[in-house]
Length: 229
Image (cartoon, rainbow, N blue to C red; front, top):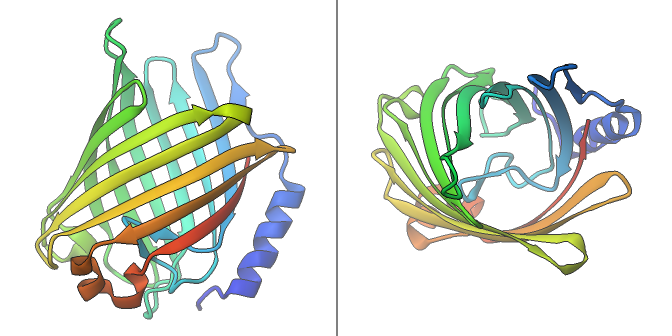
């Protein structure tokens, strides 16, 4: 059963209104956990909509160790025009600073699971960050369970503006055997106020992506409200 915009909105409102503090840290500071919930006007992944341009509710839970080891899960409703109703991601990774160089890294593996359809798949990722920039690559030899190879290259930029507003921007290039290679890009502003996070971002893609995904790849503005717990 597909999750439509109205039921999504009502569910998100309930979660945001009744959420209790879930962040936790052990007495010795070695272990910690956190959770979040978000309501967005669309779920955009690598430039194109995963919800037929409808609203999305998502949530996450993460557990980490001071060494840099972490594991977590993230989930959202989806709509691909078939029986898939939800995406559930499970991941484990390791991230840390590289000495006193100002560089940091993050490597891990992610499992995409889809309720209602049988195209679960794995992806391996890694990134390096320096100052406001992050460069990353993600690889899978079985995208959507099709035995097709996909390699996604990304470059991101994050910068703190006055009045505690954060600017983020990025560009990605997907070398995916099942479609034409395509590029996506985004730019957005976010701010924490009254205990919530607010974000407005613009997403766009090139003509190759539009040929593949049609209207789902059109440029769009996405509004998101989130709550960390």
